[in-house]
Image (cartoon, rainbow, N blue to C red; front, side, top):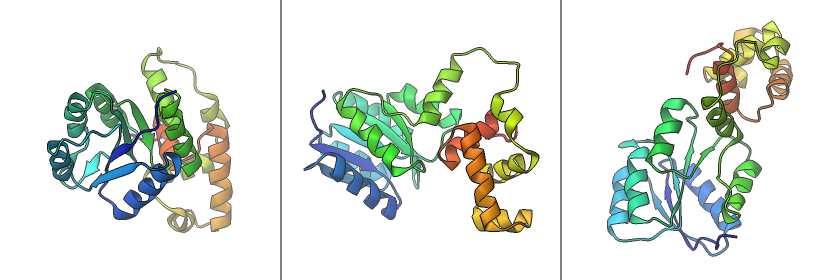
Length: 218
């Protein structure tokens, strides 16, 4: 079992998300000290001050660039640091460059909090912190293309496909109800059915599945 990290670097530009992740870290790793940076520039200055984090949570979409740019120098300066991407981007254009740069894990922030907490707990057991959707994506990258349609493609109704496409484009519940001219309750029922059929738990995972099924491009 890995020792509980005593210090963490959190690179996150949204204050409310930073507060949430800081609280989650404090809950999972009692006594941890969290250095917060809202930009790449701030994070680089923290590294220049010779801090030695054992854990780093790195967002990608930042005001002054892509958080991937911090991963390689962080890995070089702090070789014992577990570097975990925490982001909303789950597409190949973000996942693979971050992992190639040296990230040890990749977590989607819009998945249920208990999943994020479980992934952080897994760090202590030496388990790679990966969101289920990212793990599936990595596995598919090493598998041959399957010409047969997936079960999910066959079981989704036409209305569910329509809802899934709109969800993948960022539409929220009120917008879905308005665009489809149905009640919010009906939209919620469709979403529950989609999540169950595709075996996903978040909008990001649903978007990845929509892309895999050829319904949208990401």
